[in-house]
Length: 496
Image (tube, rainbow, N blue to C red; front, side, top):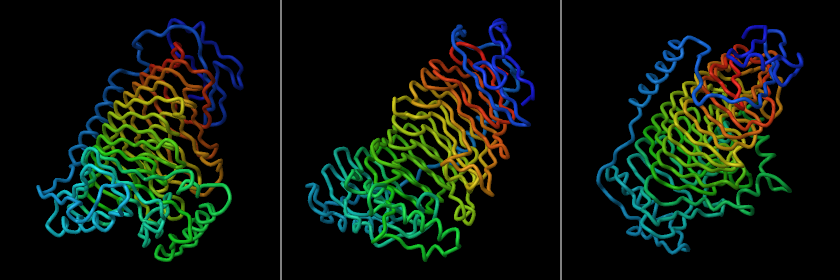
């Protein structure tokens, strides 16, 4: 960005004077090669559609076409798995939908029979089926009929023995996810039924704080093991430890489909594909707004991901793209790349669509289209978070046609001081962020952009965006080449 602040062009220039040179309601603070800005505009009226582009129209159109072409290439590669027309009803293997009988063995037997027959559908009919851990095998679609509910045990022992997993970006052996697959291909969970994790204040969620037992010592131990290079096989948790499992985790799998199901009240993250390829999450409802760290959908170190038509309300981020954490993330060093999110609705959550905070392997080529986000408990709509201990390249994140009703903090937040960490040997390389055709109706502020003095954010572009009902000044510090093009805040054009 230019070292000199420049007002947005247009007939109202006379009303857009630079105020206080240090931090004005209509001014910039310039420091070295990075820019810190405070922008807050009120009053005035913007036209229904912004005109007079701040850059050549062909340039914006060419960039949008290039992004559309890349989305098309990604979508051509993603193919949902298909299954033979064989059906294995779990009630034929002894399951009883009375909300009392333990159906774990029956469900496992049906999955094994389906797999050994060459694949097909394991049917969960209408009813309430109590179960422990469910492990999917290749070729199996776990299909939940309308009116069915898998009610997962609240006993941690039901998720033993331990399995290879990733806990907040670090590999270990821990409790199985409630639905789990490891090194399988062509697997699915489909239908109109419900997967109920049954976590609450006295089961699973109570491990997050307060008096012991809680997860804090185990989280510290796991990170120390990873930093010290302890082999993954020796990082064994599970019984006697307090690292919560995910509701659904698919680890090192290929050709994964989730379609139509409702998931609720997970012990931790709800849907967590990790180190997977070709993942489709379609028409899924995530109803988990009350639990701690109850992220909705968290693809981690995955390639070719489609998330579409989902409705998400969580106690943490709605969708979060991740790629491993710190020392262990550098050891594995696998990025998340080539992902499309489209036609989704987000309500409660810390972020609508998020990258991070586990960014160590890198996250790139993520495209968000035609999503709607609004809740008094939605903190941010678009969020990127990392810090100089995480590292990784975060690039080519392209957001278009997002409608935000209400947000509780910033509409767009991109920060490199996550968890108040501002020093480290692995600063992220964050650049190439484009947000276009985004509208917002109300929030405390439009933008919270915070790089570091030694590691600025670079090449962030907002195009054809309108943000109304903003109550406070933007917070913009240590950003290079921030481009505002046809951007209106509270009715005033703020192009630079």
